[in-house]
Length: 523
Image (cartoon, rainbow, N blue to C red; front, side, top):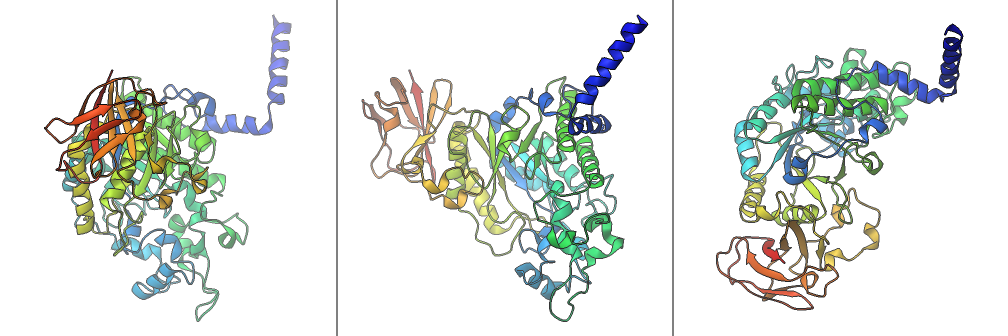
């Protein structure tokens, strides 16, 4: 027995030695990262067994408050970075309104984030009325400021500075009280190199060469500690590079794990792909395991990644920023977009309600959800134009929501001029919404519930709507149609199905603005 044991031991040692060094390190690192007990480990193989929960497939529409200290200046996106880029518009704005960033930098902006008019109960009532089935809070942006009472960022968090309130926890309570699923976003994995300009200096002018306040070691907990990095790191670092030492990756893991542990979100959004391999994978596994513990072994949580290959074999749900996929996606996915800038920008022109409704119907027809950001100013109060857009969505959803919630894609997502392939769209999913045009009465989008089909006519036809996909000899093979009605209209419709199309004569009065919905009983 002893000889056999020695042989077995030698074989095991030989097998271990044969493992690639990187794999061995990954296994050791995985073992060192503490995650909650449950069905998943922090590996791609383990996470491949994940399935997106049914509630997310049914929800279709969420609202996001992409809100934090960068909202206080009301000057748009990436304020905490751009004020350290000499000559940029926000650098000039900061000089005029705050002072030179060698003396007055982002650390001095944070106290101006007061949230003095923030009424989360009222806002959540508005979001529920508008039809949101889930709500997202900013967790932490690239600015390295945590929006909860953070264990690992004790000085720069919303409970200790700025508004001096646990913003995430307060949002969560308001959302769950109304039956909404609750999500948080983390952009922290980008922060280490994203904030690198704060360690630079003007290259010209009277303060050329004087370091910005980010270089002051007293504020390294906000602007990062670059000791051990190349001397020119601050000048060469790229905004979305995710270049960071292991000590920062561990801090990232600890902070996001703390966010999960304190607030048990139903959704966690990361700004990019799953970050830092085993660190990020372990966080995904922890999210799912925490969810399983809360739901009697059933994983109800969703992690979203913007990298398609992350989500092809289970693991997570695909998120497409400011864009849309080019077909019916095989698994549920999400578009995240905004009516304006991500962070509040005073005076910006917002998306019209029609653009929002067009995108919602288009996204849902392709098996997706729409997550829509209404940016709050530092005060925490929606502006009058935002309230008008929210009211328009509310009115439309009250008539047409039946064709949105709980639906699944049909055999084709739509028809009309907008479905024709366009060369500039090929392979370009993220950030392609700028290429979109308003949909027309000739454009149709489909959703379904069993044998009920919903056809969204994306404008009001002058006479009748003719839908070729619903002809008896259409390639979509709809079969014989038994009944057609118009959501929001109580009267009967005149309609006819022949080989070429379904033709529906609509009433004189529109039941709503923007798209209208035919409810069709299939054979």
